[in-house]
Length: 484
Picture 1 (cartoon, helix red, strand yellow):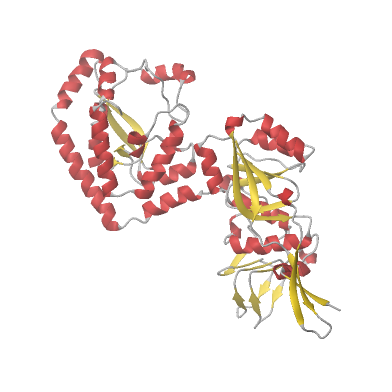
Picture 2 (picture 1 turned 30 degrees about the vertical axis):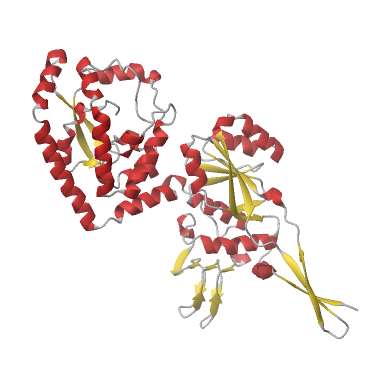
């Protein structure tokens, strides 16, 4: 006779004994906590068949079925969709959690060990598909669908196949219908969400990694080891030790009211932007001073060398279209401060009025304005633009500290508001007369703005004197050949 003793790997679900259907933390169910986690990232969760209003303040909408609780990083997916101008990203999730199993120890009649047997439970892989979109109409269509199949069919019909991407990520997916899965989800959430107060006003920091409710009573001498979340009406007695990650659910009789998400006050920063800003702000004092000294020396030399060009260009402008010789446009520099960016005037005096009539002909794919054979340009303007002579007065901006010789393209406030996170990165350094985008852009139709953002961020991440010298060399070469 052979006997079997069962063990399992489900110890991570032990917290399931402390929760049941209807359990809340800070007044919220695990499903609502899931939605607040995504809101921290500027993403509104939109469930099929759930009657809740989609909001304008969300940067992205996460389309999911009613039972899925998914936790993954959206940064790479969102970044790829942005570069490709995709309107819908279908995300196929490979659940990275260890497969649940039961182990059996097989022994004989004399209790002598014979072997181990492991039996794995089946996992529902249908949970592992969600979508991300920026289009509120697509999110509304998904929400209104009567079935998952109808929902996918509807949102596919609303987007061109060239506007859709398919990504695969490893993540954690939980089934909201199961109390044990809900509990496992919250334990995982505690481990990956260090600042729940971003979208949950009730939770207060008690100590590092420990968050409590205002109505909870936690003694000052309690020892915490790991992250712990403590709900409303709960008491942790003096001398206790709490091992995390752990959650103490609300007292069911003291469930608090929950305030809504203040979407307009959220400004999530995707990792690509955050890394660029962090790199720029982390530059050493010596490196910043070296760059500024180089700017001053280079600008002084450039103004001295090009001084004979100024009277020639000014005379040509005056003969064709009169004064003024210079044009100053308001742009933003380091930290968002505004300045007048100087150029030789290359357009007619009434260029702004003409621009209003030409807006429908704009060929640019971003916030800037561009059309081939721009009728606003004067004959002199076309010539000086071809060789970038119109930008020579910007060396005066460099001397005054408004600009650098190399940096992101200087843009007005209106253009910078197009993408707040991109603005934060590019305004962490001074704008430049030339830059990585100017020498690397391909001018492919529909891609110029995506390349602009890409090369701005790339420059901010790798800014150094060697990079600047390389860009300056490429700029001079391309300007001589009339390719800029």
